[in-house]
Length: 269
Image: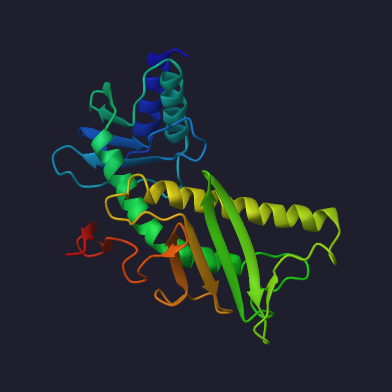
């Protein structure tokens, strides 16, 4: 890749997308991505603002992807050649010239990752329960058939283990998945897909709460979630965290909470 040519193309695309009244202003285009731009799920946030007024400018209603795709291609190319960046600032001048500044913003990335982790880790059982009702498997109807689904999600020797059982009207506990009556390969494949998603989720929850959130979470290695037909969990009655099979205090298995008004995580006093 010829980097100067690619930068010129991106600058031209950005300028093309300016409103007419902004053509004679110094315009800055702020571009922020995640920690690993090579990850296919990593997106780039882009916004335009006036250097003097710092007001975010409206752009054409139709999203122009040339500068988005061009920036990601450029950042991936640099990453593949040992230059890792998370932020780019493009300055467009009225005379048609431009300037690209690159840097890696560890503080911004950490703050964003922390806030995402704080909210998602608290809501994980609730999201899991809601997602469970959306699974479409043969002969399984989570919304109507069972009184409760009992999800046991555990980390054993660093590996995720998932067990799904249900409680019927006679208070009997039985496996959710029935391989005796459902012998088709498609059924097995569908069940395996569900279990794979659940295992990935519990491993992510474990890594987050023992990693970036460890200051605010009690150590644990097992969660039991009792999902009613509605999929709506009672925080104190339906969610149970354990450490080595010892139940954690239902009210305080975390050491803090995410304050939506302050937009920060606050420790319990």
